Length: 277
Image (cartoon, rainbow, N blue to C red; front, side, top):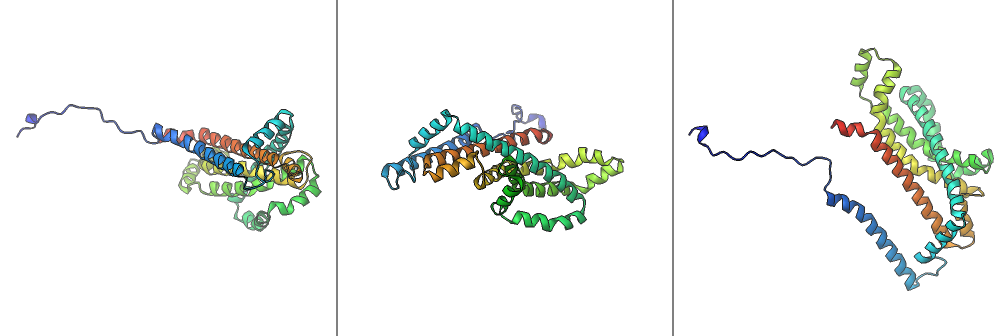
């Protein structure tokens, strides 16, 4: 049989599904499921308050919390305390991340420095920040500085570990390639080490963004005259449970926004990896 005698099938362009692009329904479900979970939580909360299983000062109703949120937002108290905490969070995050990047890079390059500093760093990290927060208040006062130091300390260790892992994870063959091309240390740092370690560094930044909130609030719990931690302590002493919940929810939103900002920055900084695939 000759090949020309075979029936010809109509030629159609070969179309393959695009990798990395989820189905629209899947994207929609990813956004809908968290909202459904939140709705179920609020529904269960409302049912518990309607059944009066606990007194109102222990578990207030969602309406009471919303009323309190409107009250403290309208009189400016929530904005005052939230802005105070946010200033401490951002300052502590910046100080802790920058210090961790500098020291982590030095440790990644020097085994001797790692041997000398590792016991001290591990000892500080293994001690809960609540334990030495009073010392920080004594040394740096009850103002903003002690909260910045507390936040920086709690941020420092995870960012330090990610920096060391990221720098040491740079492929050795790429280092040899740049060395054969007589690249300077600065060129190696900018062209190889920073891009190669960026995914690990940005993962550490996302973790640090939420930990900075914890550090600032711990400092405010110990000693402060403003901030969301101070507001929680004040409301707790007055048995104002709706105000406690409002302050806690504000901290949750703050941490989520910081995490979302770090995630957005990660997508923008690593966009070149998606284009290269």
